[in-house]
Image (cartoon, rainbow, N blue to C red; front, side):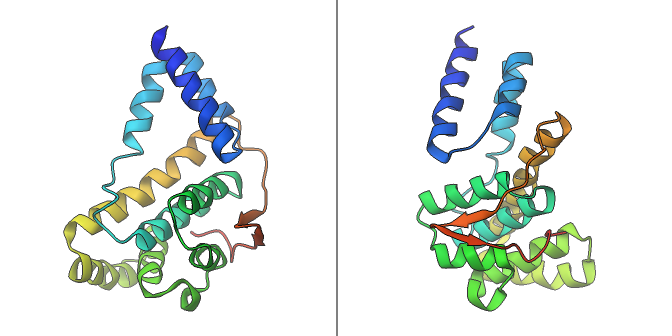
Length: 182
């Protein structure tokens, strides 16, 4: 009972901080608080210091865009903004403007798109470049970030809560996604 109350308060704060509807997470909480905890730990597996922030943001947003049409992408943008990410870089990632997102974000963006498309011809040299620039720990962090970003929208849709698409807004400016990421 204590775990349920703690998680409910955490969800209250999360929803308020990011203006996000976490009804699907509340559904999991009602059914199995322990599962919500395990799910949360699984989505926090990536080491945020193992790769450049722009690379992790790009990987995460591509992962979210591959599964969602707005709310989960929006919360990803809001979290990245709250963590100090440059809104111009985030706008470029959402729009698919590789030149404007910068070299670091563009590398992870292209890698995430190629990985999700199972395009090994494109993915293999990008993977090699990530390891060359930032090391194997960065590759693992980027891979886990892509995976984790897809988990929330996948769960939301599986539980029947994924019914609303919305515009993505970065620092007050609406951005049209280039298209779904994969």
